[in-house]
Length: 455
Ligand SMILES: Cc1cc2nc3c(=O)[nH]c(=O)nc-3n(C[C@H](O)[C@H](O)[C@H](O)COP(=O)(O)OP(=O)(O)OC[C@H]3O[C@@H](n4cnc5c(N)ncnc54)[C@H](O)[C@@H]3O)c2cc1C
Image (cartoon, rainbow, N blue to C red; front, side, top):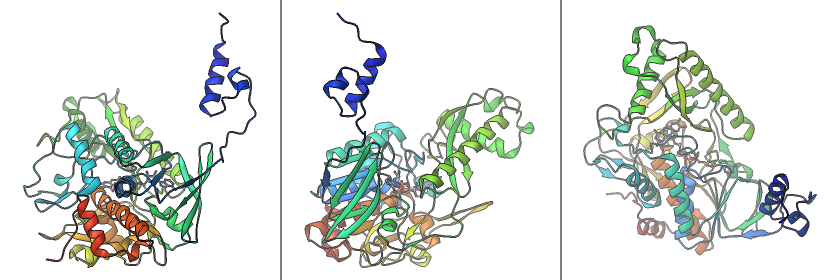
């Protein structure tokens, strides 16, 4: 039998996987065919851009509502800040002894926790807000999110991003660029879940941004040392705290309680971190990694830490704040801390005001007993827009309200609202702002969501 040379074999495998299985490439010859595929247009009812915390939930809800749904994500997996960023401790699904977030987001987090370690008792009163966060396994969460999207009939497209969007004759034409792919997606509704209001901005609607945004963080875990035998006197405070916290992570417990959801990563603050463009996110990643490397080198000079090593590190610097939409309604700090319920409130949000500032302590304000904030539909809709809705941290809000609204369970609640509102708007041939509020509430509740009601 004639032997095939290893190099030729690899070349032809590459060509076949690129969809160029012509007779010449099967023979292992060099092909000059362009790699870009610009063949077909995709037609769908709803396009979700961004498969992170909110986007996954929006897509599942849209799929379960019977709409053809495409989810475009520029990364390689679902989950966004939770998985790629490493913020694997979503909060807060519970407030004051009861659950306040339901629907696909809750089901996803619940299944991820159940497969890993089971839930703590949330009916007891929270000591600190983070006692009510849940802890998920990042890779497991990403796999479950993907599985649930596929089960809901969602067409997932990784490594792609929109380059232009245009609304004409009641439909969006979205140009998508990906690895080896340029395509047009034609759809009726868009849900912008990019965290940065990227589609809203491409479509020409206003966005809001602070002069100085909150810092981001890079998350990692260290190993290779024994905290209990360190001479703590000889270790500067900043490193002692990091080593103590990291030791608890290595032991898999905070010390007080097996479940206690302490932050399961060490983190370093990355000032100015911005995920808006590939250029700004590249810079944030390089800054984060440079700091981790410097810290590692410094730690290795400390007695007992000579063999310290990186056990895990997230591939991206996680970003807290960039752009928010300029929405039909802007949720204010006063709305948030007073737990205002609007006629069109569709989901809850519960977290302290939590503003991170460069070189200063975190500004935190706790909600008073029994107060739970809410998110009205209007805060998810860019002013003047048609057939466009957002979900996630770019919700229309002032800065202090946003510092609490941005947490994950709140983003998941918004994701469910956006998925349901887009589906209802598609079915009724209207725009999300004009869907009947009572029908939307019912639809959210029918899919397990918890809608705030004025008592
Ligand atoms: C360091 C840090 C600590 C935090 N701590 C907590 C905490 O303790 N508890 C808590 O609940 N929350 C916490 N948060 C907040 C919370 O994690 C985020 O605000 C929330 O996850 C944001 O969700 P999102 O869906 O808006 O965005 P993301 O989860 O970031 O998702 C956005 C997705 O869109 C994709 N995307 C972006 N642009 C494009 C594009 N142009 N084309 C295609 N895809 C695109 C991204 O790749 C990503 O997958 C923290 C955040 C940070 C950064």
